[in-house]
Amino acid sequence: NNVLSFIQFLETVRTYGKIKRFVHISTDEVYGDSDLSENEQGKVEYSRLVPGNPYAATKIAGEAYVRAYQAQYNLPIVTARMNNIYGPNQWDVKVVPRFIEIAKVRGEYTIQGSGKQLRSWLFVDDASAGLKAVCEKGRLHEIYNLGTYYEKNVADLAKTIQEEVDRQLGRPHEEPRYKSIPDRPYNDLRYLISIEKAKNDLGWEPTTSFDEGMRITVASALKEHKHVKMHVAIYGGKGYVGQELQHVLRAREIPYVLAEKKVGFDSDEEVERELALAGVTHVICVTGRTHGPGCNTIEYLEGGADK
Image (cartoon, rainbow, N blue to C red; front, side, top):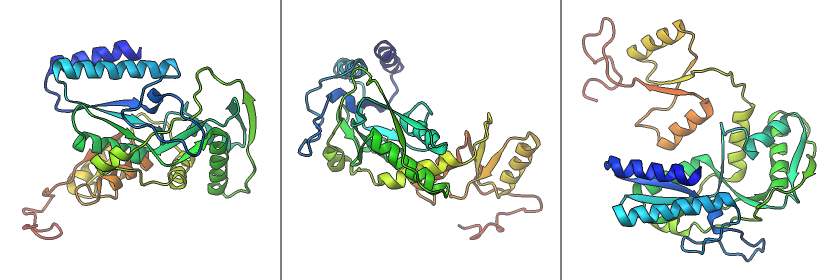
């Protein structure tokens, strides 16, 4: 239950008493329907909340409890209202991974109603960067819209995914086939939000184009993923400790990859993207200055002992 479980969560935060900042993730659906007109303005953080479905109503209830706990207990909460997120390794019941699977076999796309409902598609890297900005720079008790410039209706989304899958598989493109099914109740036409506040206050806006985000997402989905309980990425795997760790993993038949990016040197975004594309379940970092067999000092390290 979105409401009762969230109240319990707030109570846990309150009684623990040591949380320095709590980022509450809400949804663009709290604003309700936006018009399909090209002149429609994006909803801002103080726009009226008009839920068009029960899910949105529960999210508004959650935000109401956030405000109440902020007022009563001064909990350090910042709220982010977000567009639809997509990217590698997404849960396969969501529309993008589901459509990719259909595109691979050139199946039939089921479209609810007319298929003209517009949705804004925010790539996962941009969403993560936005939440990081909210966490680090957002003012307490404020709300920030984290959205995207890229809108597509569901029918056009299917067409884009089919084109990208065909391209990456190196086969001639075929137009997608659609099957119309009854529209679900409470299916709003559009969720259009303004991100000006996030741009001005946080210095954040999405940087990944829809085409690039979809290219990365499809490439990840087309990779052969073995179903394993554990798949490890190792940072610092070329050092003595890293090599010993590899012996242990091989002996236990645990698959692993040696990460190429360098934590602390490469940007966080580059490291995060490498991990997303690798599809690992665990990360082990053994970077550091360690001695190895026959080495009594750290002079052998690149740069010398003073670096």
